[in-house]
Length: 196
Picture: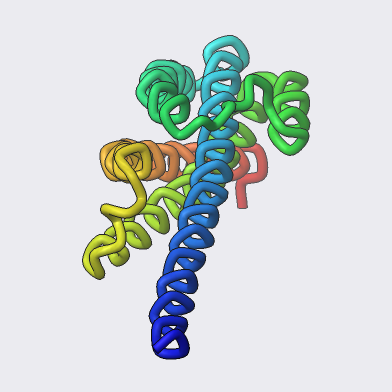
């Protein structure tokens, strides 16, 4: 009898260990996600302020103001979720974003506009991809009955990602439209300087 009782105990321990490992992986994934999105948000706010100061296009200035407003709001909504998950959010930019801010701070006018909007397109593509991955991953896990084990902080983080994604996609579409307009205007300017 002792021998047959050991099998279920070992199985229960294995299941418990798998659950602990899955929980630890979810926590690590959530921490990286929160850190990445916090840094991206900090960058959008800082660079948006630069756009208001250094940009020449009214569209670029307006876009920068929208970045400050929307990303400040998103950060304020993420903060209590990060606290619940016991994730210490970064308060400064990473080196990649510091370098970008430094580069942009030295530019003015049309050159700033093009570089800033190009960075906004690339940055929003990256953030949209991370948000989409989070939503799809957690939605698939929820469909398999695993999301409940993740805890309410995990669920709130996924809900936040779901809520923020359409705004980021709207920013991306607007940045692409502004970039296209800037490239078109630059082409017209070149044709005026160098008529055929």
